Image (cartoon, rainbow, N blue to C red; front, side, top):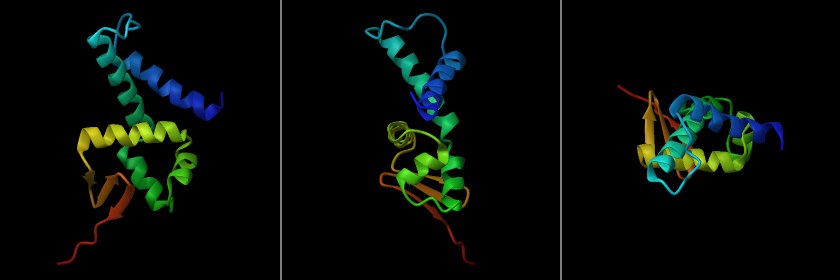
Length: 114
């Protein structure tokens, strides 16, 4: 397992630490599946915040491959992150002067005129 893969796994494990208690190994139980998802989502947002997507855009990152390298995450993790944000926010999210479109991934900076 690479260091990048380990970081992605660790993000989820830290999510368990911060968001759940007890044994949730039995994924046949709905409450355990919800806790599992909450931990994964916590990890997604810690490793790949919306601000980090904007930071990558401002650094000149233009495609998913370069983004995974910039953020030091796996492509599988990135795809899960984008799916999570799309489920949470819809097709896009406005953050300050930026609009982040999740599918296909694009970041736009708004130019405001008077």
